Length: 175
Image (cartoon, rainbow, N blue to C red; front, side, top):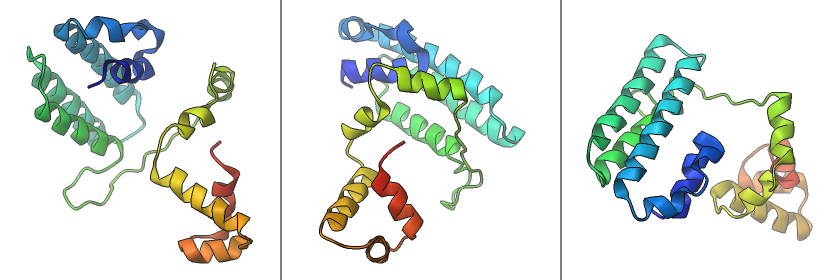
């Protein structure tokens, strides 16, 4: 894993405490494991505060425990860690059974303080999204191209088989 990417990922969870982490972990592999454990403790606290059923909370806590066990003393766990992280992400997104249907809905919101703090950051959230290629950004770009070619919102909604409201929302860009 790229050291800078690792630092940015850990900083998303732990904030500026992980600033400058990239230089240290490139020379000391066990240091990476320690930072992952710190992040896992923080994730466990967040899971404990989630408004969900006891079963769902226990399932997510179990996945975090499995990640911690996979780490153990291993400085390079590779695939077992990836599998455990995918299981945790699936649980966070509500996929708790083996049928591919979510049994829980993830809901996110921001308080006013969080909203304004994000706006006041050095970089605008839209700038961060612009550097990330994903299906939504591509879809938005294609819709903008069709709009520039003279297609109406209704026609674009037919092409993408979605509502006119969703097309209008995507054309406005990320918020």
